[in-house]
Image (tube, rainbow, N blue to C red; front, side, top):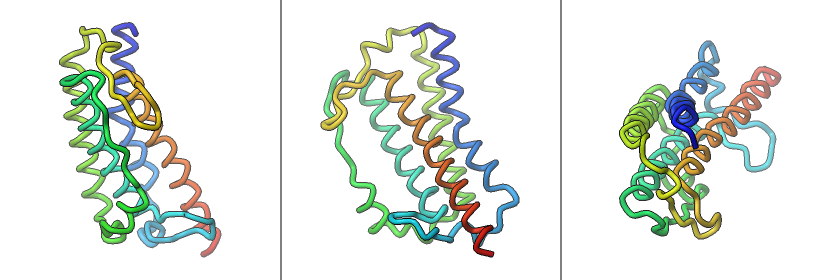
Length: 162
């Protein structure tokens, strides 16, 4: 991966959460708790809480990949986390702020090692196998994009139900 590709990836990672915030601007806060009539759908508020938990896993996985290359990482049960950690009470703006803080700190860390060979830094995931640093960062960029689609779906369903 070239230096420029790393820079682009780091900035995509850093600013992915900004897109979530933009999507929620002007959206009725009642939409944050709306659950569409779709199996296993989560309200936006729960998705935001989930994104912060995922970012905390990103924190551990990225830093572990550098500190202990090829070390095993845990799998987390997102359904158990959502059920037991009261996602329904998450303060959406504050949670987004926390996501931004975590992502900024991780992006700063990634920039501090930008000249190193990222192929050497990796985690071993029990289900996904070995993932190098660029792949890990990409997973967490794509994770936000995945939730943006779900958030858009929820907003559209909320507006249609009104």
